[in-house]
Image 1 (tube, rainbow, N blue to C red):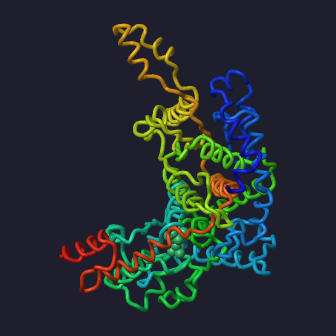
Image 2 (cartoon, protein in one colour):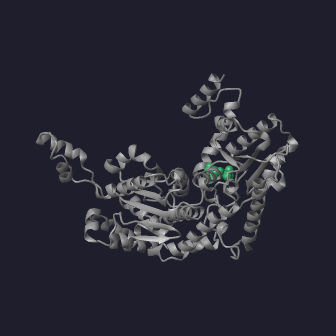
Image 3 (cartoon, rainbow, N blue to C red):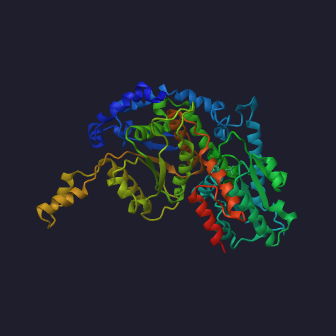
Length: 545
Ligand SMILES: O=P(O)(O)OC[C@H]1O[C@](O)(CO)[C@@H](O)[C@@H]1O
């Protein structure tokens, strides 16, 4: 048995689970539930009143946090302790957005000056590109960026750029290429002019197959379009922690923006990996994004547990995963600009908490990270919300909506808000059999038919959901929102006693992929593997035109 399941709070929560009444009852009993179970921080407002919790639940969850040493674990992360123990690395994405007067030590060295230096280098570069003083090989201004990277070196820049579309300066367009499928890069390059296109190769390791292959193809395209090897320096820059490999690959040393091994890929948009964002919105706005995240770092590291937004959200998730067997969590963004966030949070959470051994190497005997999925409202209401309301799985939901739209057109936003709030209400209260029957009272159905249809119209309700609001989507509120989910992910990992910062699960696939590649390119059939893999490889070799 693991330590976690032996904690007194864990045992108490297991028993207490049965005693939590339906949320309808909780709301009826407490006219102040909304006031009591909501809080504001860093430009965000969280309503968590529509959760299956009483005061006792929350108190037990906070005890669980204390018994799990959450507060010292938070401090260890911010202090730069090597909490990523399987890779012996500090976890300091927070340092990337820290104030420049701070002193944060890694291996007895203050890392703040090099962060500042890289931000200054980014600022100078952004200025040159936006002003047009950086010229392509025929003297023209850069108009298009092609950002090549995958995983954290793709999702963060892409989704934040998309979310901050209203803040683009308008001079530059950006295209993102991640997949090794040639269709992705071929389609992106269509219509681009090599003279005015800049490629950013983003890879922390500088060893990721997809990114290397796409960059080579981009360089070939550039040369096939009239650029020459000598012009590559004007059109290719890289972001990497492996400066040596990037230089060997042929990226000019002055065109390499460094990052560091204490930044995880899925936490890296705050580093020079965020360069595409800075090129689109300008450096001042990029710094506002960092400031918003920094505010959330301050909140997370200083607010008491019971007033701490990431702590509350993380503990609620643990409550459902471990005590109600919730196996997924849905993120519903009621803002078209935020439509990519569920995919971003999916990598953040699932790559971080998809683990099954504790830090001590013991197999867990409880569930860890749930499946994260979602999409934009109201679209999902006409697709998968049916399962949220009446399906058999319990799926906690986060609704995210800015109170003001960047496009205040007619009644659109008030209708959007009515749908968002209406969904949170429907999930919570549901519809009883008696209510369903009453709705059918005036229909021409027989009594038996009414009884039958009413059964189908029953919605159990009592489905947990959070609502996160902000005045308006700005770089600062977006920074705070993303940092909130980063820290929520940390809280869950800390309770589950796992390492949220490695990703060994993706490594085996990479290794086997390399072996399969060699076999696909070989001039003879494969017979050494399992017979399914042999069969697939040989089929591919034989059927290829
Ligand atoms: O930036 P890199 O080193 O190319 O890695 C890309 C992505 O690959 C992963 O390791 C997963 O395969 C992610 O964690 C990372 O963001």
